[in-house]
Length: 380
Length: 73
Image (cartoon, rainbow over all chains, first blue to last red):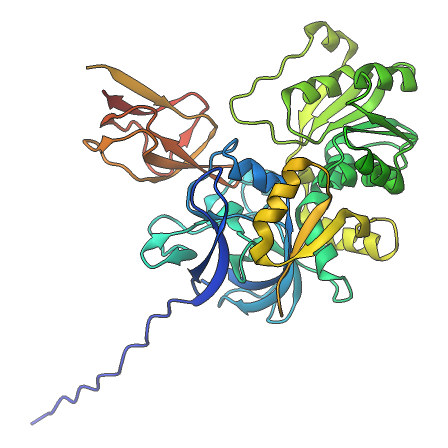
């Protein structure tokens, strides 16, 4: 007689991941709430990152105030640097302890955009989780929508392996965080989207984090004239320290007339770094024949822009720029080198270091437009 | 009874449909979530009414101003 012995092994407990504190947006135009949120364990191609620094960016405000609608609840924040905490089974690019910058331009690596070198235009959903999968962020049964595949106003981030880049370990984390969005967006718009040439005439409208990065980028690119336009004198002073050769306070003079006067005919390149219809049209009006306007700012959904049609006879061009048309795995380590060898000036971009619990104050300060960036510092 | 077409404000993909045909929706109820340039953009009911048509499915591509849902008020 044969006996069948069945050995019943206990099933491994299903891990719910970790608990963490995060700043949750539950309703547009309401303050973020600091809540305990669950974060899942890494899937095969995912990486758990412990952010050490996260910039509070003006783009976060666009989503907070509803000018860009976003699925709620969500955890804002998209500009961060930190340490790898844990990697999924198929991840070979990074290991626990690596220093990384995260980037919202997560790329699949095999779509038309990726294989033609335009990684920032990748729209593949595979860098996130699909609706039938357990969400990366949740609170009990409630899905917390991940913001731009990142959500960095949180003590942990679970992201696709193609949403981060390794960096050298002597780079300060607060400066590295800025490279995660504003620096790459501004400098990239100059280098990649517009391709600014040495000696050219450049105007940058808006001297927030992105506009200042564009000014710094134009200086690195060797632009001959760099005109900074803003309505806050303190920001124009920072612009000078980053390489602006001229400044215009648009609250006091007609910025278009002033630029055309200074340049004796207009700019080769203009950059709009605010996200308004009026300033986009001004960027167009500031161009010399053959010039190119690059719109970096996030113009609210539904807003239309008007251009004088006859200007096209002068071969003027206008184009958008998303995240500086980046190839961030290549760009960001170079920007780190630029900082460490003194070409990229990130120190004066940070006005304050804060705790996660102070994030609403930082967002309120951004609204006034009078301060540079606040950076959230997380305890190690 | 009037039919109200709900249009997509952006070009993107349908990531998740969160309402069903036959549901009674209030203003602001989320019908679906679109994905466009890394953003998860909700499509909300612009008026109260019954969801009577969902001409798109998950993973479909949608264009700006394309009808993605129809409500009956």
